[in-house]
Image (tube, rainbow, N blue to C red; front, side, top):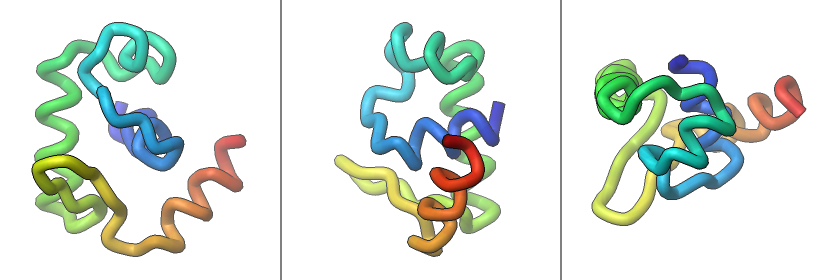
Length: 69
C-alpha cells in the first residue's frame, strides 16, 4: 500500500483519505493512509506540510510516473 500511496501522491491527488482516492489506488483504510504517510515521512521520501505533500527528491516523482503509467 505504500507504493500505491506514492503513486497517488505522484499523480497529485490531494484528498488521499477520500473513499474515491482510496478505492482508485487501493490504499486500504484511512488509518492505513495515515500510517503509511508517517512511515514515508520518517524514511524521508515525502514531506508533508499543512496544504501539500511533496517528494523529497523531485526526480523520484518523475520516475514513479514513468514506471507506473
